[in-house]
Length: 159
Length: 272
Image 1 (cartoon, chains in turn brown, cyan):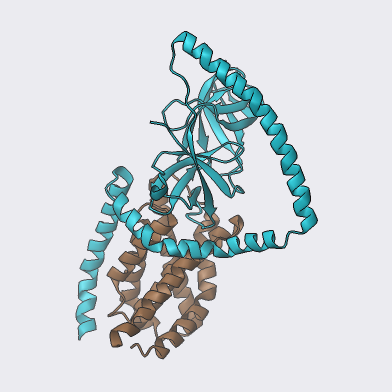
Image 2: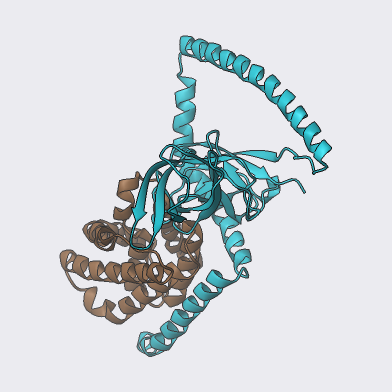
């Protein structure tokens, strides 16, 4: 029974994946927040002993497959982001939501830079707005993501 | 305690996973070994893809449901007219095809065989915004293979790059990594059209200044390279620019296929 409760983590990641491939109009695509990264940041902050680097790794592989990107691109970005988060979460967890948002913006930006860097190595350029647009939107919605996932975690009695 | 020790191990683990990701990228970029991994994961997440494209499908379906009787009658009438015109043209075409075959036989060359076609529908799923990829609802169980050409009713759209049992990924001719061998109908000049990441533009680079090209020239597939069958319409030249320093001409062409709005596509299977 207690093992089953942890399925909410997987379920939230599946929903994040759906949000990543949901069709959006062309102009809005570069503003799509990285839902996968947001959800992983939350869980690795709340349950660092459960959701760690391997979680990030496998989520990344699945994300790469569904986005049709080169395998390993988002994987690398998510591993880096979760690694930073695992080092800082104790200091960040106690901050107010607005302050957390700024930290999340930094993490999402790192994620974006890694993704764009891999694109660059393969000879494709990334528009400048794509660097900042998605992390900004991610920063704005972070408080809601945080509150929703926290309520889910409490309902599922995960600690 | 557990968390304390974990924090020390995390650095090594992270390093390992970073190198693993980079190794995977290199392998995926250069070789085909990871195609199995990709298709297996795709199979697992394919229900999600269908789920995501459901609202669009339902919208279409509802739209069809509420089309009024008179509209349907009008459409039916228009379609009948079109069908009549097309079959009239087809008769002519059949005669021409027969004549063509006969002449080819006279010349002793092999007869051109019509290609096999599979009708597929798009799944409305967004993928990497920097690429031009689309997902279709037919896969290896329908006989689709990597490299098959994809067209719509106006022209060439792209080719298949990944195949899963129930779906397949198509790279559009407008993808920055895609190039398609083409031929000008009017002058017969051969060239290669590169994608530029926009669904409205293809680029023809490094044409000699003496090349006989004009705005409004039509481009068809040349059949070189073996991927695309010859003589399918590809694009129309919209502008030509001359690079006097390097002595080249490059041209921008607009794809014939409706890359951003077609819902039904045809996958061409070459006859063995």
